[in-house]
Length: 200
Image (cartoon, rainbow, N blue to C red; front, side, top):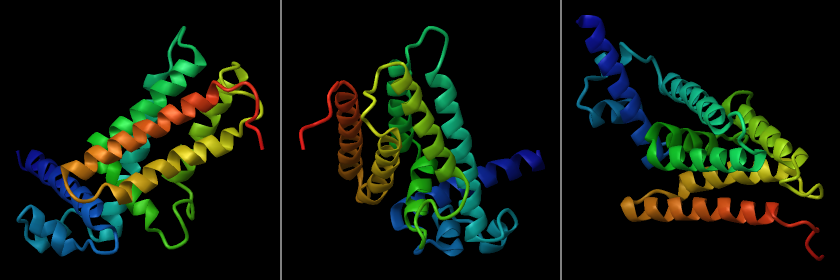
């Protein structure tokens, strides 16, 4: 019973930290604001996490697991490469919009002084994974050869990083972010349907 209560408290802390990071950014979030959000004493909070950095690191680790789950779910026997790519991008957009922990990680990454890819980890893995998925679609003929798969992957990650900053300010802002992210995926799909490079 005591262990179950500790697990529940830990999950509440992670949810609170994600909400704080997403709403106020990494720099303005403190252990005190996380504790205050769920009316937990600071001492109790430190019993689970020793620092803000440790909280962020756990959220990033979980985001890596979530990304792999979305990637695995997008593929399957008989699913064309283009359909798998669309499912992957839509799945990422959905997680970014609906799951505060996943959304918060992009806000954390966007605020890194040296950029989101300054250190190995989730951002690198996500970019490499998306690049490979775009490359698979390109090999299958779903994306023209002249298109940079690396550029499409960077555009996809960049959209979520940008949305994490823009999606602050309540439900209306969140709806706008969701619509903008979906618009980006539609633009990527339209670009993938081109068979000649755009005129200079």
